[in-house]
Image 1 (cartoon, one colour):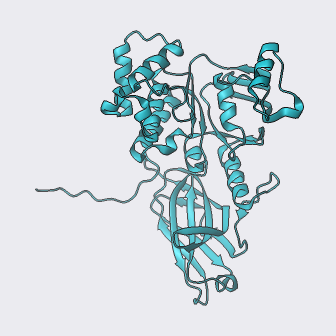
Image 2 (image 1 turned 30 degrees about the horizontal axis):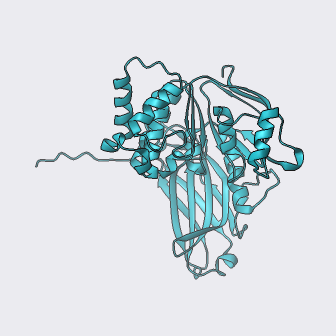
Image 3 (image 1 turned 45 degrees about the vertical axis):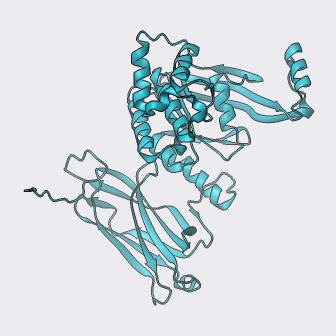
Length: 389
């Protein structure tokens, strides 16, 4: 059961001035006036949300939907024009790359300044700085001005500084997308560690796979308002469908693409499969539609977890000359105990460009049963050979 909200926004709105006049801004600040309605650009409108301690929430939406503004309002960088915000004192935020850093200061100087601005009482400053230095893996650049940093270096320093204060709330806004893969994995592992300790996390990314991997709830912003707020799989599937189709009126049909109907059916031979037994997924296509394309079609299936994260993905090239495009994917069940979703798709591939002709999000469901204690997601067959050299 979730505890009382750690972050709570009630009727929060934020506006910007369309004219962007410094004189008007000065007069408004001097007289404590709000932005005139005819000069108002709505960034956030009537936001109501509550995030409990220990929750990991994904924040998604198109560019300009209000995601970064919402985070900056929560952090106190912007002050809301209307409404009330409740938030914790210790917030570790990774917003725009370099935000909050003095370009002339070195990494170590910025880390020291950040701790003081946060009001964090650090008994052993040397140990604190050594921890940031070690996690960021910046080497000698830790002692150089941040204006000499690449975007990846900014991300390293920002993440290391944000987690070093042991925040009650960690906010990550797209910063991990610029880092190299090894550092990204290091950050994701740290996020999982913070989750296990009860840290509340707000994670913003256009990478739906990462959101599904980390979060247990998604808030979808559209035009400065909360459009959807719910479980990861439902909201992310609706979002992906709308991004591809353009609009779906808030309803998910679970099927989208340029030529829906090219898939006749996708079904399991058995919906309950024991570890080591064969999983058979039968795939049937509309041959008349397949024949209209060149030999560059690919059929694929994906076995996903409850959040929609791909665990097993298989694909097969299609030949329009075949009299029938009914076939089966057959593979050994290596999945741990649990329930899984099977998605299927037909894609057209041209010069590394892939477009979906049809994608079925929830084609069928599967239950895996195992007597083995599987620590990972899967347990493949393997051999161990002793090396004599």
